Amino acid sequence: MKTSNLLLATQRENPSDAEAPSHKLMIRAGLIRQVASGIYNWLPTGKKILRKVEEIIRKEMDDAGGQEILMPMVQPAELWHESGRIDQYGQELLTFKDRHDREFCLGPTHEEVITDLCRNVIRSHKQLPITLYQIQTKFRDEIRPRFGVMRSREFIMKDAYSFDLDSEGLDTSYSNMKETYIKIFNLLGLDYRIVKADSGAIGGSDSEEFHVLADSGEDLLAFSDKSDYAINAELLTELQDEQDPSSLEGKPSPDGKGNLKLKRGIEVGHIFKLGTKYSESLKLSIQSEGGNIFPEMGCYGIGASRIVAAAIEQNYDEKGIKWPEALSPYQVAIVEANPKKNPAITTKCSEIYKDLKDNDIDVLWDDRDKRPGVKFTDMELIGIPKMIIVGENSLEADEVELKMRGEEKFDLISPHEILSNL
Ligand code: ATP
Ligand code: MG
Image 1 (cartoon, rainbow, N blue to C red):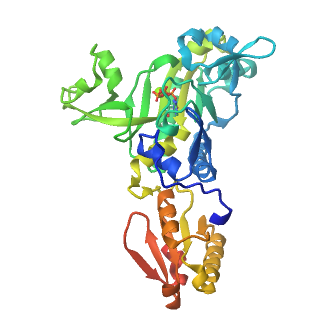
Image 2 (tube, rainbow, N blue to C red):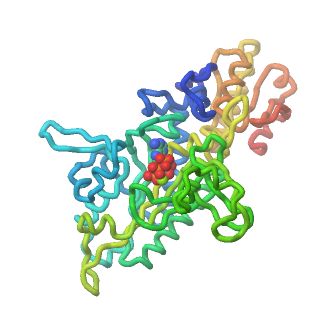
Image 3 (cartoon, rainbow, N blue to C red):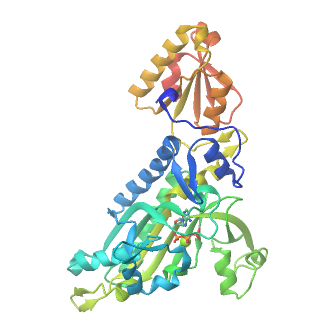
C-alpha cells in the first residue's frame, strides 16, 4: 500500500475528550473516529488491525472444533421475555419497536438467540457436543462509554456457546475453550492473567476472566504472592462481605498461601459455565438414551475491538504505538526522503516495494509529497515495527537506513540485505 492511496487521517493534537493513552493514540494514528458517544468508525488502518485480531481468534476457534455462524444483531424481545432476562439485564439493553409494534432489542449477547436456534435445528443427542461461535457487532447502552473502543456502546465480540449432554461434557468443553483462549492471547503477544470471576447478569456457576495488565484497567485484580491464586477483587469483596475492593492489598490469600497483591486489568475475555439456565427456560430439550435432557451450556466471549485498545495500553511510548508483530497493520514502512532532490530515490523505493510485496511482506510506502520528518512522525505514531529510509546520501553509497520502532539508532545496509534483515 502507498500512503498516497491510503486514508491515513493522522493528527498531531490529542482529542480533548480522551483520557486513556490508547484512546488518544487510536484517534491520533487515524485508526478510529467517533460518530456518537461510544460509537465509532474504524478507518482502513484500524480495520486492518481489528481484522488481524479476528483472524487469530477465528483460526484458533476453528482448530478447537468451533463452527462459525452469524446471528442477527436485532433480536425479538420475546426471546428475552422467555428467558426471563428482559428486566434483569437493565438499561444496557436497547429496545425498540418495528412498524408493526413488535418489540425488538439490539443484541448485547446471544444466549437467547443461540438457544432458540438450537431448539430448532438440533434433533438428536448424537449431534452433541457442539460449539458454535460468531464474530459480530454487539450493542450495550453503557451508562458511561469511555476510553474509546475499550468501553464503547457498539463493539465487536467473538462469542461462542457450547452444548453438552451432561456436566462432565461441559467441563471438557469449558477446558477446551480455556486452552484455546490461552493460545489466542499468547499469539496476540499480550501480557495477561486469568482470574476467578463473577458470572454477573449472564448467570451460571464457574467463570473466569482474561485480563490484560495495564495501569488504565478498570478492574482491580488480586494475586497471591506465593501461589497461582488470582481473583477479580470485586468478586473477592463480595465473597468476604466487604465494601472496598482496594482493601484486598497485603491481606492473607484465601487459599492460605501468601499475601494478596493488587494489579489493574482490562477484561478482554470471559468464560462461563451456564449449566441449564437457558436450555430450561427456552425449552431446548433433546432426546437422549435415558430420556429427554436439557443440554449443559457454556458461553465464551472475547472483546475483539477492546483488544486493539488493550494491546496499545501495553505497547506505546511518547512517539506513538509500538505494535507487537502479530497485530501490526504493516510489517515495514518505506520512507522516501526528499525524492525531488534525486529521481533515483523514487526508483529505488519502487524496486524495494516490489521486492517486498513479491515476498509477501506487508509494506507501507510513504510516497507523499511531505517533509521526511512528517513521514517519520506518522510511521512512528502508527507504530510500524520497522522503517526503511531511502535518502540521497545513503543511496549514493548504495545503502538504505533500517530503523526499528522504539530505537534511536539506525543501521546502514545494502538494499540487497533488506529481505534477510526483515
Ligand atoms: P465489563 O465488565 O468490562 O463491562 P462484561 O463482563 O460485561 O464486561 P462480557 O459480557 O463478559 O462483558 O463480554 C465479553 C467481552 O466483551 C468482555 O470480556 C469484553 O472484552 C468485551 N466487552 C464487554 N463490554 C464491552 C464494551 N462496552 N466495549 C468493548 N468491549 C466490551
Ligand atoms: Mg465479563
